[in-house]
Every structure is written in C-alpha cells, then in structure tokens.
Image (cartoon, rainbow, N blue to C red; front, side, top):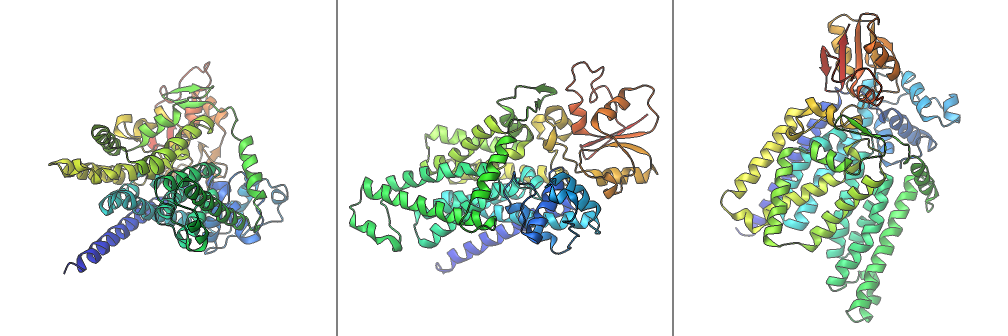
Length: 542
C-alpha cells in the first residue's frame, strides 16, 4: 500500500500540471484568434518564415532567431507566398518587405498570424512545466503546482504567450536554464550537463539580454561547488585524484562552466546555421547596442520624462502584476524576514537573476513595456509558491489565505480575457485607467483592429479616419477608411473645422500627443470618445 502512494501522488501532480498547461493553451488560443497582428509581429513573422524557407537571416538581425524560426515553422502549415525578388529583400528593408509579404500572402491574414503564433503558445505550456519543475526542486511538489497555477493564469505571460514575438520565449528558456543548471549542480551527470548547456543556448537565441545568464552560471557553479563536495562526472574521474577541498571544487566548477558554455555556443551556432561559429550572434548583439540609445522619452502617469525614469520598470511591475500576487509576494517576504530564513539557493537562483534583470533593464532598455522584464515573472511565481514550504503555512488559516489569493489571481485573469495586453491591477484602477499610467505595449500594440472592423461594420461606416499603431494596412483586417499618421489625426481631432465623421485612434498615439507642451488640449482628457475598443482604440464622432 505504501509503495503505491508516491506513484499516485506523482500521477496526480502530473495530471494537475497537464490540466494547467491545457488551461494556459485554451486562454491564449481563444484570445489570439480575435487579436490583430501587433507592431513587432509585422516584421518578426515574415523574417522567421524567410529564415525557414531560404536559410537567409538578413531580415531583423537585431534579435536572435529562435522564436522567429518557430513562428516560421508554424507557417509551413499554411505556406504563404514569399517573394524574394522584391527590391526590399535585396536591400534587407524588413519593414518594407513586411508590408509586401502580407499584401502578397494570398491567404487570409488571420490564418497566417494564427499559424505563426501557435508555437509561442506551445512554449507557454513549456514555461508552465518549467515553473513546476523549478518550484518542486526548491520547495516541493505542492509549491510546484502553485507556481504552475500562477504561470497558467498570469495575464502578463498570457499577453505575450500568444504572440509571435520573442518576449515569452525569453522568459521560458531563461527559467529552464535556471532549473537545469540548478538540477545539474545538485546532481551532476553528463545528461544534466548537456541539458543545462542546451537550455542556456536556447535562451541566448531568444533575446540578447539573455547574455546576463553568462554571468550568473559561473556564480552558481562556484557557490554550489564550494558548499558541497565536488562530485565529478563519470567522464572526469581525474578529479578523484585531488582531495576534496577548494582546489577540487573550483576545478569542478570551472570544468562545468566551460562545458556548459561550449554546448551553449554550439546550440547558438546551429540556431544561425553556422555550426561552430557565433559571429552572426555577436554581429546581432552589436546591432542591438546601436538601438539602445534612441532618445525616446518614458511615459508615466500622464507625463513624459525625456531623460528617462529610473523606476519605470519597477512601476510597470507594480501596476501590471495582479494585486493578489503582490499580496502573496508580500506575505512570502514578510514570512522569511520574520523567521530570518534566507535560503541560499533561493537567493542565488531566484532573487539574483530577477534583481540582475531588473537593474540592467532599468539602466539600458527603452521604456516600451513590462515585456522587457518578463523573465522576472516566472521566477517571482516560483519564489511566491515557496510559501507552502514554510512552517508558517501549517498555521491555521494560512493555507486558506494562500488558496484564496490563488483563486483571486485566476479570477482576475479570466476576467481580463481576451484583453491581456492592457491588463492593469486594481491598485492602478484596472485597464480602464491603464493608458493614464503607461503606454506602448503595456496597453496598445495594434492588437484590436478586428474590434474596430466589427464596430464599423455594425454601423455601416465605410469612410472612417483611422490612425492605428501598425505598419501594415488596416484593410487587411477589414477596416475601411482613410489611414492617417499621428500628427494629422491630432490636428483633425482638435480642429473645429475638421470634416464630420468617425475617427478611430490608437491609444498609444493619443498619449504621444501629450508630448507637445504647447498643445491646446490634452487629447486623452479633453476629448470624449463614443467608444473605447479593447482599451486600445478610441473612437470619436464629430
């Protein structure tokens, strides 16, 4: 009887995690099918497809190729046309080629975009599994299920877990690198070493900020080797000749890190189809550096900050993270502080990478959205789930309180469906007030053109004036009317002699209209829309 209980427990955990993966898939898939292509997807999708079909990586070199390759593989199901004879292909004009690609795709844009997004949804499910595995490794199976629950219902992970972009992949493979490295260092084996190197390589292929992991892996290896006897791999029994002590432990750490980096470099080179060479990766890293200092002002709380805002990403995290989890996080931190229980592996594998990401991104990244710190979320969820391993959890009422917070977290996510991008918590006033706090991909990334098309069709409007946040023609989604730029739309909205009619404006463009201090009106506060679609498109009638 006792022999069956562990097996039954493992089967129950596997069933729960599988259920949560299915829940995450259902939420993401049912949402993405009603959302138009976002700003960055317009170039990522054709770039990735061109990588797969031609093996040529000339488009969009400022981002590593993994997530674009996956979206390109997804497109093999529908096989849109790819015209490499167009002049924009020769000049590597990714935005011009993007417009030509979608105009010439000969397939409904909804089918193309849905097929390209499906691989990201599968990576989201992998992230749920990774959160379970890491939390279980650190705190036990119950914590693993709670961490998976938080990931499956996170509106921020769901927002980017159904787009053909690189942010969710970055979070997923960074998390898997943390888990596989921790597992290998605790229980060394050749297979564990290979897996740690592979996941590190895949993380590096998602986004260039994953290079931060190259600084963390040696720290992890030295810290764990120093505190535990250095267990050599079967293939390195030469370490047995050295007595257990600092030299042997440092040798083990150095060998582990070197092998991990070598495997990761091989994976990176294969991602670029240049086995053994990482020069394409390094060249892309250089392109990224040139894009860091573009002088774009940070928008926060209705004001612009031309010199940047050091706490922008901290504020974004506090405003866009569900309130229930912020409470759980505070309880977890207070519990640890009260018991003076600072677990070393928690600090090394959760707190250190999360803080490093936050500090580096705050110092270098453009103020475009919480997506830049997306890798922090699964790490924070794993940390928060650790509350179930605390002695305090066994106190009367604590378990019910954690369950209530987990339920409130899920309910908030379900209420946000399908509008995950503009999610803001109750402390911020909800998505209705989101545009007053932050802009860009925090609220409006061009995702609600289907809602606008439906709104115009229901009213028989064919001559609307449209100012979208998109590089492609809104007519691809059935939006009929005249497309204008941000400067012209703001002039039309404020000109009393402008022609009467319906004006549909991106929320992001409205916030940027606030940047001119000499403007006669504030377009968000002084103009009254007749409708706000998906919290991202404002409709006016004149």
